[in-house]
Image 1 (cartoon, rainbow, N blue to C red):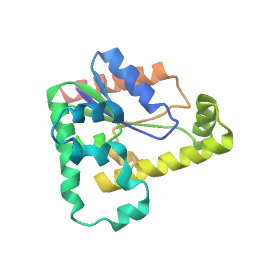
Image 2: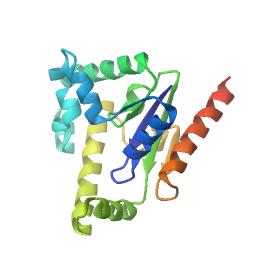
Image 3: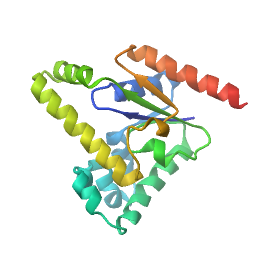
Image 4: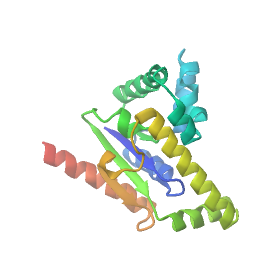
Length: 192
């Protein structure tokens, strides 16, 4: 069982992912834990940009890249596919829905919330002003969009790229986790 979670900044997608992995008793991977795993391999230097988001902080960079970056994209894809083959896991971010779209046991989820909700939540959680929170939400969403366009060559928050979308402003973290598990069970029953 592989579950990928894409998310808007401030929507609690990483918390949903961590709690989901805990409840299912499976491995949890996010940017930091994937980077840690990558450091154990001899391919880390080739994977560094994928974990540090350095090359894609602007859409201008994405537009300026050419075909030589194709090989740069293949290495992290292979790394994540290999991890997914080894064990059941939840993967948050890193274009997991795109990289693993052909995996037969993958469920893709996108966690979102209205922008104002995410700004307010970010301001409270980080103890910063609403103005700073707004800038942070916009900056992080733009970075995620650029990252997804660069690596997946598709729009990041398009619903067609996900099997399930959840508005985290409408339900609790625990309810979101239960909803995902219920969705997976119903999906599996339908396919059997």
